[in-house]
Structures are given as structure tokens and as C-alpha cells.
Image 1 (cartoon, rainbow, N blue to C red):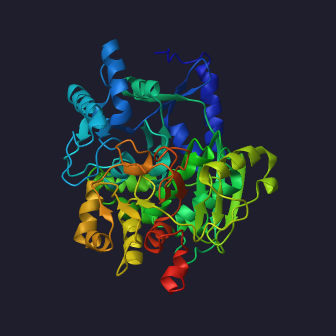
Image 2 (image 1 turned 120 degrees about the horizontal axis):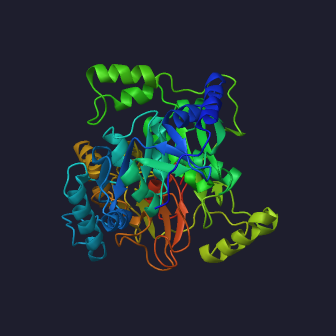
Length: 491
């Protein structure tokens, strides 16, 4: 593990910090500077991490490094772990239901026991996807730093936290030191204004944004999402928005906390209580970008006329509105043309054809992007008194055991089962297929996940990313559908 020696001339660094604090600052600057404890000789800042959550797919490698080095976890009280990526979703599952995941599950259990880490195991009442469990339990809080060995760590930025995905070596470093070494990202603000139309959600907004800026449009930036459309979003939708931040290359993404955030967090198991809540609330209300604070880049998107979006290609920027046709590669920017031509071949599409009406084989509603209770409620409202089309296999996988219980208490599971959906146990499931939930070669899937890369949901599987509303409508129609037309009886 490399040295974390602070660089010389710390007094000069302190003076620069004081200058920054007297100037208008972005919310990113406030959180970063508060947690910055030094700088390495290579120029990377050392950032204190308030809490972090591990999952079984990568944690065992970090535990093995620590054991080899004979080093303990520095703050097991700030460290949490879940079983999510490889766990089976079949009812009555156990650690051996998915044989390929059994070794990961057991290694996670052993590592957490040896290091005194709270594990939300496969049979725990709070088990679920790391990015769903952490916010719903209040493990992540406004203004906090958070790290997860998963690229979609920024999901929790919907609460106003600054979260980072990390690799296995970085994870081991965090476990031992409680800091992460990072180059300070640049600052971007994305203003999303206007009022979203019926059946248009944060997923549609995020897909449109990625289509506009590209998969590298936010590379090297920490992104603050702002504007009237964001302010009107429920917390769960803000998390969906931040979840997709990595798909345009962002290092982290977040929304400034507000009264809706505080109400959502109050009373959650790991959130402050009593006087500590009052003190936290006083601090959280300061977490906003100052007037006249400078950003390195600003983007604006008017969402007023936005329609439901759906991906047509093999990266999350290859997206069109549901009523639009797929583009002609000849009309695409030269920098993206080769990728588009390859995507057409893989997806079995022709230039200028509509996606709406294209037959689908499978529908998946779940993942850290869209598996919270409001996501399931939206889907249930659409499939109520309807049925999955013949020949379509449709799955609902809640993001956590808590979400599953709440959905069942509200009768959503009965609605889905009556409509012909599979109702699963919580976990990552088909997002990357790490638990065996995969499509068959050549199948076309409408999925609420965050990535549509080639072979991600199974060899030769063709994935179309969409919102829960569009996915549910497509399951019922048996083809890619405009949910607005289905609800209106025109599909």
C-alpha cells in the first residue's frame, strides 16, 4: 500500500484553504474541504470517509489484503456490509440457491465476523442492495462522505451526500485508514427545469441528459443537480437521477438537501435522534451552494416537453424518446458513429425504424436504479387489472427486504402476481446477472437497470433501458410501448 505522507509546506496549503473558505463556494467545495485532511506528494487529496458499505462481490478481496498485511479495520463501527450481487432472488432462497455465489457469501460472512462489521446477511430483515439499504436505514446522511466498491455509489447523493465508487485496493486502504486518496474533481452544475409530464420520471430525465452530453460528458466532474424539476422530485427519484451519474462519466453526483430530505430521513434507524437530530438539522441547512459560486461547467435542460425515454443501443447515451425513431448512423457525430454502427448490428435494428411496437421477450423491474417502493407502486398502477402478454417473462425484484415487506403490506405483490409477474426476493438480480438471473441469447429485454452494454444481462441479450412505467407498459403490451397510450387505452 502506498504512503499517505502529507506534502511539505502545509502552512501554504492552509492559507489556500482559508482563501477558499472566504469566497463563494459550491456545495461540493463545502463537503470536500470539510473532509479533506491532507494531501499526498502525488497531488491527491486525502478525504475522510464518514461511512462505507461493502458488498460480497468485492469485499472478500479487500479482506484478504488486510489479512495478508496483518492490519485491522480502523473503524468497524462506520463500516457496513450487505449480500446483494450474487444472492438468488427465488422465493425460499438460501446461500446455496445460486451455487456460483455461495463462496462470495460465505467469504463476506467470515470477513465481517473477523473484523466486527455489521453485516446485513441473506436472511437479515434489512438485507438488500447496498445503494438501497444505506439510505433507507439512515446510514448515509446529508453532507457526509460515503464510499462503496461499486460504480453506482453516487446513488445516495440524492440525500446530499458526496459518494464515491472505489476499487478493491482503494477499499482496503479505506478499511485500514478511513480515508480515500483522490484527485479533486472539477465542479459541474446541471440545471433541470420545468414540470415533468404524466408518466415521465427521473429515469427519463437522466437518460435524456446522458444522450445530450454523452458517456464521457461529466468525466472528471462532481455534478450538482439543481433546478425546479429536481426540487419537485421525491427523494427516491433524486436517487435514481444520481444513480445514473456515472453513466455520463461523473465522479460523484448529488442534490442539495432540503426539507423533503430531512423529512425523509427523520426516524430512520441510523439517523441522529433527539438533540443530535436538532444539531444535525442546523448543520444540514447550511448545505447549499453559495450565490455567485463558480462552476467549471454548467448544463441546462428544460424538461417540460420531455417524453418517456428508451435506449436503442449498447450504451446509456444511445437513447430516443418513445415516439421517435432510431437515428441514422450517417447523421450521428463522427466521434460516436462507429459505436452506433456496432450497436445497430448487436441490437438487430435498422436506421430510422421506430422502437415502439418492437416485440419484447422479457421485462425486468428492479436494481439500485429503480427498485424502491415508489418505483414498484408506479409499475403496479399500470399493470393493475391487466396481464403480462403471452410469451413475455416479467420480473419484479425489490431493492431491499424492507421494500419487499412494505410492498406486500400494500398488496403490490398480489397485483404483480395476478398480472403474471415473477415476484422475487431482494437483490441485484438481472442488473448484471451475477446471481444467475439472465436472459437467453437473442432475447430483447426492457429493463429498469442502468447499463445496456453488450452481454451484460446474458450472452447476446439485447437490453433497452427505460423507466418502471415504460417497462410495465411493455410487459403488458408484449412490445415496447408508450405508457401514456396504454393508460389512455390507445395502445
